[in-house]
Length: 100
Figure 1 (cartoon, one colour):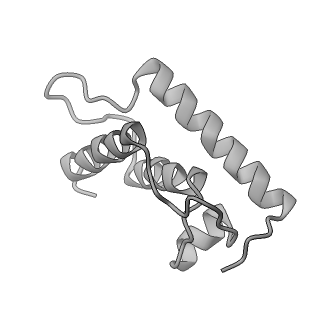
Figure 2 (cartoon, rainbow, N blue to C red; figure 1 turned 90 degrees about the vertical axis):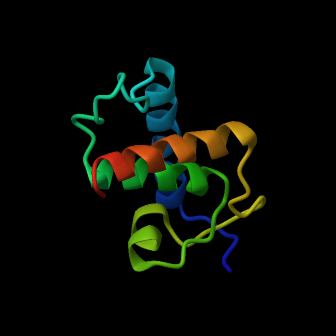
């Protein structure tokens, strides 16, 4: 496990945090009634879900995860808070609704 971060890793992490904050502020990750999450592709949902883990220091094992979020990981190594865990569960629910 690498614990050093490159400037590009930090930029990706900050961008992911900003995106997640924006979506959580406007409630874009919540389905409107029984409507599927229109406009949120499987790729976008994957990114949002994994950005939560990246912000929590998750060590990505897949090529896609490492390419997107970098190879650096840090404490708490992907351990999520209750709020983060609920956000991941909402995203996973949307992924299922969209057939991802």
